[in-house]
Image: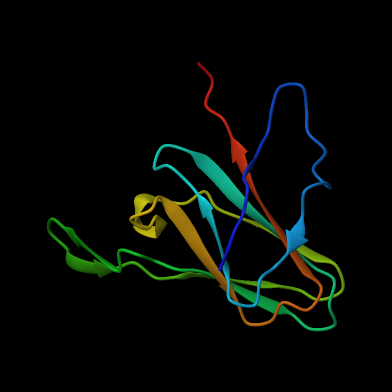
Amino acid sequence: MANLTVQTISIAGVDRTAGFVAAAAGGDDFPNAPDERTFFDVINAGGSACVVTVVAIITSVKVSGHGDLTVPNIVVSVPSGGGQRSIGPFSQAYIDSAGKINVTYDQVVTVTVKPVKVPRLA
């Protein structure tokens, strides 16, 4: 699993086309604190769709009056031929004990990815 660097958007502006890296066959992870607004951008230039899965770490939560509710993995299909998706932000249920979001792919041929954070204003 590759550890990705998160790009922070700034008031000065950032090049949204820069910083994409090849998706790793074994999956990727990136840091995300519970109070951050991080998104995961995916571009699929391949000939078939790519299914991206953000793994739920906490798979069940107890809600008063409703009992246990299932927290599903986030599953997004990114279309072929240059399809793009931004996924997120992510709740505490998707952050592992190391403070990271874990992502897997059903295929990585010509799939590029980049985590992007929108900072909080002071």
